[in-house]
Length: 54
Figure 1 (tube, rainbow, N blue to C red):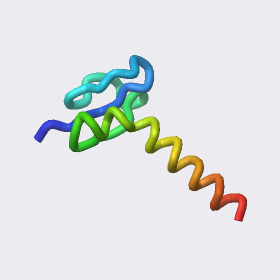
Figure 2 (figure 1 turned 90 degrees about the vertical axis):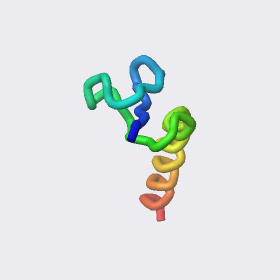
Figure 3 (figure 1 turned 45 degrees about the horizontal axis):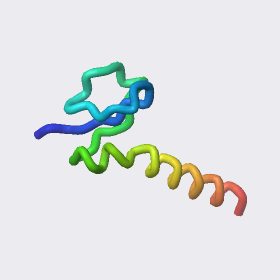
Figure 4 (figure 1 turned 180 degrees about the horizontal axis):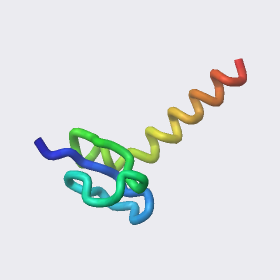
């Protein structure tokens, strides 16, 4: 099964991990999920910050 990765340096989607793992977010099941990787990261960070404040 193909996995999709978001490359934080190139801002491109990779099918199967092609770059060094330090540059990738994933894996995701679909290209669309990988395209929204940064949005998911931001949302999780905001949630964690809110939990830290409580």
